[in-house]
Length: 386
Ligand SMILES: Cc1cc2nc3c(=O)[nH]c(=O)nc-3n(C[C@H](O)[C@H](O)[C@H](O)COP(=O)(O)OP(=O)(O)OC[C@H]3O[C@@H](n4cnc5c(N)ncnc54)[C@H](O)[C@@H]3O)c2cc1C
Image 1 (cartoon, rainbow, N blue to C red):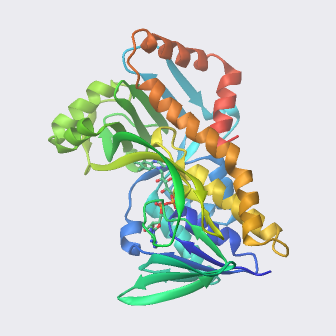
Image 2: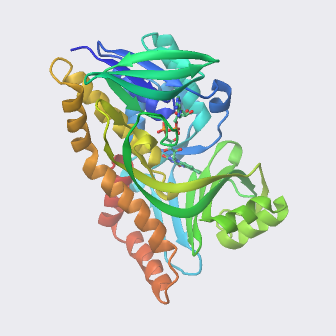
Image 3: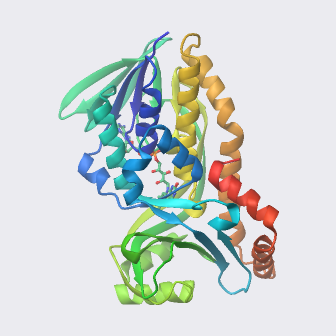
């Protein structure tokens, strides 16, 4: 049975899912509320894993974005105040890179261009989905606002790829949310040392700091910590901010000389427990939001998109949407739960200040550094989710 699929949200998860599914005979509509300009100018640095590269190659996008990508050749993890540290190098694992950095906006621009050229997906831009209504058990009506006009779309499979923040009347979703009460600052930082494709992760008692190699020798900084601390850091004069960063980060990445505009995001960890509506499924951040500590949010979301599209394509003739959704949820359960546990574990373990814990964490990093099998398992999990 051919499906009428409506996807809410043209972020990376929604766009990639639409492209992966477009080889089927289903009708696909994609609805996005924000303006293209805003999304294409989002400079957030995403760390793509090997599995995300595979997915982008599958939809024939990788070649188009290669010049926008910075490969990560090594990852340096350390902890403020102890000697333990771990260094992972791509050549130890016979791989070209441990990950790839791309700006959110560059990825969106390439994906949208592909959707446009392909001409198989119906696009509804600057249209906000506000309500869903059940017409029958097998059919839903999606009600959107587009430039002061009402737009309605019928579907028998609704894919939520809205990032998990929108309010849509008629949706009945039970979520498990953990309040972290932390924020993340993101900005570009320039230092006096070339980055040489090294990514740094530094754990401090108030939260992790990541420096990701970026274009023109700059680093993308993601500094997470308690709300008050991060709000103060955003308000600081640039020079004092760089001094504070230097103090927390140390000298490994050289002397920080300048930074660009600082933007802060609030951090949540949440995952869907049940969607009570029929024929509705969620992928990407709409399904689970993770702390950015391990850079796994997007990568997990893209594997969601791949699993769902694979099931749609391989079961085109037989399955009802409900059967399909059941198989999909079963296929994603173990990986999603383990990724949520890993990211949560990393943030709580490394931000705990009990006496003695600091030294144990240093020891853990030192053990990881000199145990090849542990390193291999860790890289495998971060690259492929398995
Ligand atoms: C500070 C920070 C750093 C991060 N760093 C990394 C990293 O290094 N690596 C990594 O893998 N991940 C990272 N992430 C996570 C990553 O940004 C997300 O996982 C990713 O953007 C999720 O993609 P998505 O397509 O699911 O959702 P989104 O990118 O949020 O896209 C959702 C889309 O849906 C649209 N939408 C919402 N509601 C509606 C509606 N009602 N109607 C129509 N359209 C709607 C929105 O406008 C948006 O375009 C980071 C996140 C943060 C906050």
